[in-house]
Length: 310
Image (cartoon, rainbow, N blue to C red; front, side, top):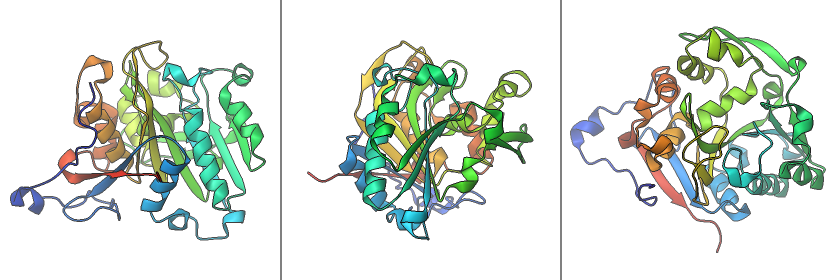
């Protein structure tokens, strides 16, 4: 069962406060001392909740410094499989559409939704997101299933040294990582950090030539979303990543500029794989933290609830 979702994580020990220096190379500007990261959560996955989340980060102006009409926003959901949302294996199309509507309402004219899927492009012709994308002339849906869509990139990782990343990342004025929340038999969970694997070309070496968890943690050094949102409208607790498995309905979203922190909070809320673990016990999340990508120690993460308009 999920923990008390309205619980704020607090720190009371002066000794602990004194030890809380930010991770090297990382600082979450939204986190007041003594915290080093902030995660926001909202009850609901509609337009009002999404708009409220953008607002707490200071609005789109936080990331987009040019004319909104000329900006490109890249949304990277989890579209790995041609499944309906109720199965809990992909990002909810309802949430994706809410993000689209908020962006368009702010004046964004160029929105790209992209993912490198696990199946052929034609297998996705009947998913809900196709019809949603067709409703909005500002939106282009890209199934990044061709090698020409990727570019070689060096990685200063402990295991991963080179990979081919999505070229669209270089074009984006704002990159939103819009993950789902599910169990994964190999990596225990698939959340925001794991979702980055859909932005590279060759995933096979992660499974064959590299230690997969370290490689994923290394990937977070080079693919750096501006905003990470985890969809917990439905949470797949076991038999992931493909399912079917036990799915619970939560109707919530979590967001942070710190990809490690948002994963850590969501891991703490649900018994993925029918067992409760901390982020330090999830090897790829720990690897990203040890790389200095972000924060995973819950006592250093401020969790705040955001309410949409009533």
